[in-house]
Length: 357
Length: 234
Image 1: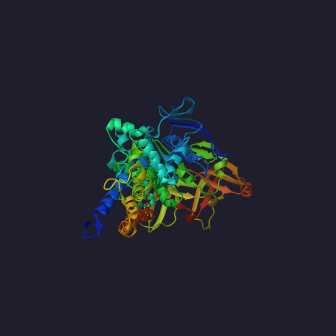
Image 2 (image 1 turned 135 degrees about the vertical axis):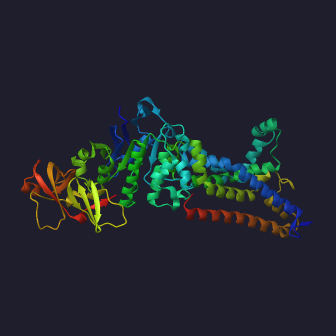
Image 3 (image 1 turned 135 degrees about the horizontal axis):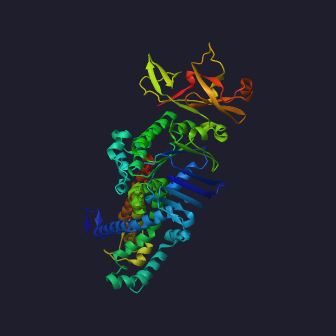
């Protein structure tokens, strides 16, 4: 039986219709899609803030919502922890009191989440006496995550932190969330509009557009479908590679993907060593031979897995040890006579890479 | 005879004390009802809500004398409510200072509800959702999140109610009469004085007091309003 079973059909007064059904048996599921796709509404329905016209939500062996049988478990009894986009800490309470707000329910439950351990993992020990108005955006998110966690949830819902948080801060929240998922093994449903985030964290992704599911599966497969390949702005295609090893020598950062060396852009010396490198498929140059005398520092050898067409561009999936995508024009793909199975070199400028810790 | 040196006569001091007592009690008695009505109007949507709105705001536009008349009819020992109070508790409201409190509560109620309702409307309803998702029921959410966040609005509502009660005249004289030392508050004392020969000249101290008290209450409410807008909490 799947961990989470979700079905809903709901018209909004704006004319928008949400018509979505998915199951997930994975620990970390992401809902991905552009703004207005219905992601946050799905979270609201699971949490119980919104009751759809027709809907069914089952979490493990508990039915939380079944409009056909007039079942709707009240919000307070759903055991679903919510981390809102803008944290929504209680402004009149200290961080300590915010964290402890849900503890009363936790005592009745089997899952043991220790207060001291949460404070340690989320690194909020120094903030306990403060009020939310004196916290930075990132600190607020950590406290909100801890508050949800300490209520002993059986499912964690997390709306992507506000777009106003800058990118490094957002990825740091994700790093904390990953720690939480590893430490307490709580099933998590995360809302995102960044392909890099989806690739980084999720075991399973449900991709939505205008209230409907356009693809689902493991991130690698689902993000290779035509719809997400064709998106622009914040949901545009984005590669994320896990660095198997990183070294800093003479201030220079070097990373490895398997046995292939990757020159990384310079980074503040005090920073943590990065664990991921992010780059746009449009910044990957392809060549059938390993070229000498080019300025691009990185020449990664790989094999073409498949080609996909979207928005008059050809997206080429290449296995370099991990799958990455390159975006080329149809004319270039034609001229190079690219086919699945071909060996290619992916040229990447070191400065075209963004590092993520 | 004068108290405070020669500042106030005994009658004036009694009117001042009575006004304070009535206005304070009216704010205290009205507060729980105003909180309930304010929260209901701010947060709930139900059929017939407009009727509640009309009822709550009616005393604002009715002539106070009409309010007083209706209260007198209801609460007189033979009236529908008054007879019950008399039978169950042996209590009498009309023509006692409690009658003045009753008149003040009803007349100041719309102002209190308005201030409190605005405060509740200013609180992000998602904070209440967050509390419920953390396992708090409606009552606990209200007591630990909504009410503390609305505290300044509650104080402002009380101050407004207090100030309005200080000035209450029409309904009070109908329900509580004009009994020296028992129901003669400052406005009634001024009214009584000015009906006596030379009374206009002798009223100035009470008039000054009334202006001072009402102005002070408004200043407190204004100050609270400013603090609310600078520290971001409602």
